[in-house]
Length: 614
Figure 1 (cartoon, rainbow, N blue to C red):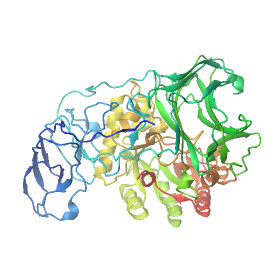
Figure 2 (cartoon, rainbow, N blue to C red):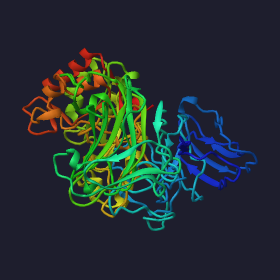
Figure 3 (cartoon, rainbow, N blue to C red):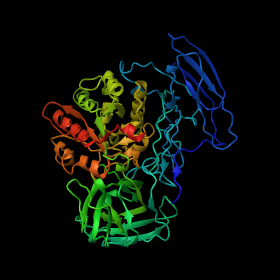
């Protein structure tokens, strides 16, 4: 298996570090690097501090270096020092390329009244920064290791091949904003996320692999496709004939399979697939099977189901999907799934099949790069893992939901709409701080403006998304909410109206993005695509199926599946009410109480999204 490419490039001898002059009323100030720093400071404990800093870095003559973080001592209370230097947002508008890393750069943007918080919303002092450089290669990074990219020539998900048919990338140097006076926010960099879990077994479809084509809807198969790959020198490509029906029988399938291979043990394991779809609009399903006897005995996972709304798999991009036992879709022959959705056997599998069923509207091509075996969630969290999240900042979550969670020492993640804080029916700033500081909650981001949230990021231009996400990040920092987690408004992470990847824009400011997709699979830890986290939403007695509270906690519901068969279950609530629920956004307090009690009775681990990712 080829080496994985780091997302973050190391500092090297050719690194050019521009001179930076910073004037700020916020103090004290940390700097990073081994460059001489000349500072003039005058202050007292009762006055604001003004710091003038000039960085004049010397050249790096050796190999890659890791620069320390140091603070100069100006005689101030050390508790007032920031733990890491601020980065200057917002960046000149350029999405990351295949070999680039996210870097904070200054931008000569006009003053944008839109990002200024309304009077009284912030109690932190105003900050201003004037930066002479166009980029800042010394932007601080998290001390956590960077997540490695799955790809050699491009990255999985956002930032390389923009999501969706017809989506476009922003070319290097592309500017959305006109020149003018800069007004950057002083923010910390989004934290890096964990590397992909190492595989204990991997089929990367290089020359000599023993997989073959099968099925009644095969148009074309290239078993050694050297035109599209992200590992080694090739992959397998499978093009359907474009005439599948809607029942998914063998006649409708185009598949590649391996039969009669060495037996594999999947106890405590999950399957990870890496693949790319040419056009998801021509796709109905992707299935994956394991079994024996030519798959006469088999288990089946639904890898992907096409939707006319938001699709987790996007056209033209490489994705990684992890399949866990709790997400089994069916069984055949001697293999059974019991009422709790636990499989009858998890070892001895000699056969595997990757199967594509098109929508009957023309050929669809899928490139399969890897089938891998990785640890499942239960190998780390033996009784399952749950995150309890809330969208839209409703105050009844604080008054009705939080006390029930406090009873069991459960910590939640609340995804916040910034300009609705301190307005009728929504959290106050003090309540957010109490949830964070007294109950251990994570205060995460959802949008800055309620109007943009209502329009969805998919309903506005890329410039508006960038402004909103940047302003949200600034508001969070100003109020000491340091989460790196984000939830897409309406769960939409595809494209803006002008064809740019929402996911890639948000990733400039946050290191995880939560969707509201839950149809096929739950998350694993660490998730292979953290900017596209799955969750179960609409939990309310007004709903049928998985989102109904009684189904959720009942036999074979998602709590059972996460506890007994694996998966990181992210629950998404909106309101916790004491009146009769009117729609899917309202969960009655009694139903919420039953869910919390069921999680506690199962002994399931409850963590915030940020805790899981850290």
